[in-house]
Image (cartoon, rainbow, N blue to C red; front, side, top):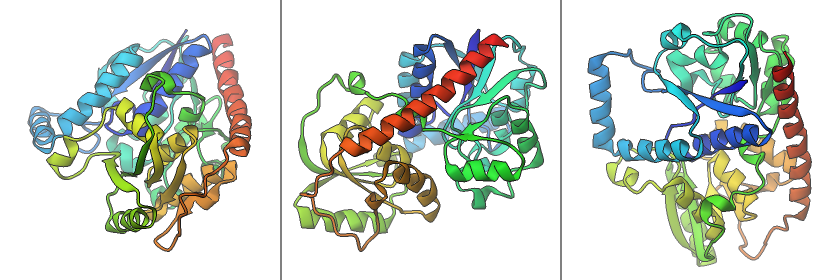
Length: 357
């Protein structure tokens, strides 16, 4: 039995890449054969035709995006080689002959956020499969429900309702689905299913007396906050982006996945607005603060930090940071291990169920 995983896994976003990697590796470690469905997001907003394909490639090259996409492709191809051919549209997926003996898992990240998936939103609920398939979900996110409520249509909900078991990444996702009569389990983000990533950074990190600023939005308020903390602590700022930026010069500095993780592991203090940079700060036991540059990010990050009892790591411009206040991770690790165990058991249960149907 092949376990097909549909998620966002080749976008130049470190969190998207690593959550996909982690789910693939965890399924593999549990004795199953994972395989990514390579659904490209190039045409989620524009029609697939020759003009749009050429225009898009030229635009990516001009902005330096081609290099960033290349980094994502290289990492996934190297570490998760079992993949389908490329699909670009819902219709292409629908025409493919899928085997009902196989298993299909919608993976994590904001795959149920229509503002991200666009015209492909129904693909990410397996609407292209039809009835009689073994469909499950592991930790997808709707993003911020209140912003997406009008975009989540009846067809999406009906498709999710046909899943054999449903899990989501945040508590408010569980509550939203309950309103639709769908029972869902809250589980941990896939990146937290693995307790160690040292093998990806050669098991070596050099301690750097730096403040690492990892930003997705690159908002002025966040940059000003980092500058103020730098002045107070004496730590020099090392700045990296977590997603594509408008300037080609910034995109050409895009780190490899391994370099990004190593930057977190080696820094003295991390300030970020990224959900997954927050996760890896925890995994590497770093002193960190989450600056909420966009209000809609508070829910998914706060949900995780509350689970681990460290919601005090959410910062705003008035937050005072003492670099000497080093967090002890013993209690955090204990809670994380309990949370991880529950989620691994859920993943095992759907894999075992799927293999016996």
